[in-house]
Length: 369
Image (cartoon, rainbow, N blue to C red):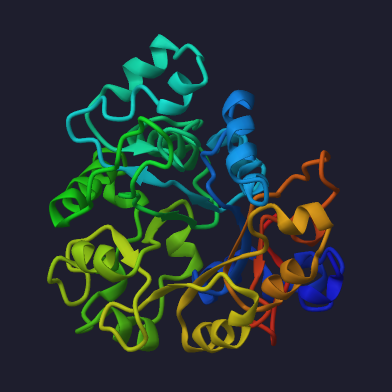
């Protein structure tokens, strides 16, 4: 990565900035939106089996490679420094709906009885596309949450972890597949309940906590600000990466996410505006304006394996310099089948002071070495 993307510093360290940037000062004076860190996209995803991938190649010869990536287990990614994870879920209140993927049946592959047993439990399941891209390092949402919660509890000084989510209720894309169930407000109530079943309040940053005495979440972010970094260490927060009917169903008539776990990708000016997803390279000016105002932004350094296949770092470098606090990638470690493309901070820092939020002091200094 070009050093100029993070404050023109090459592998900065706190000592180089003097005693004013010691951990105690940072934790008192920086807020959780004053950071820059790198996480992963579709963090649960395992490689598609070769027989199913061959079918995808035949049916989508110009797009199959978009799905040709995978990640390590969640705890290993956290060990490696990822501070944004993505868990996509499908609704399965009775259990078993996704236990026998059509892709396996259509290609004559046996289905592991342990997989069937896990997927037969009632509750949300973690997968990318039912029937074809369903392999996951955490089959159930609760299991994925438990892995993150245990890691977080064992590392209480970590930078706040952002968990982003898509909620899939689309149709199956293969013969004999099963359509996902719709996400209505009741489904989202159950989603919140599963989070609370795993995470104690002390490990969460919620809209209610950020809002405090303010009338709206937006007002709180723009005036009081987010919790300090010291208050946010060792905690996680959740963002629903959805708009339209999904966002409205999650709100469930709430004006400012009262009682909810997730922040939402709110429209400009909405009472619950605090977090925003802006993934495209063209979003640079909007990202900068949102970050300057005080919002937290998640963006992507790459997509659909394209940057890795071309070893093209332009989008990566631009998004790391954009001000977005959380930059997501499929390549925190390179896939050497493709290139040596990867997305990491200088000096292998896990999180640094944000280049746009803190240019005057401590910019680029490791917040979590």
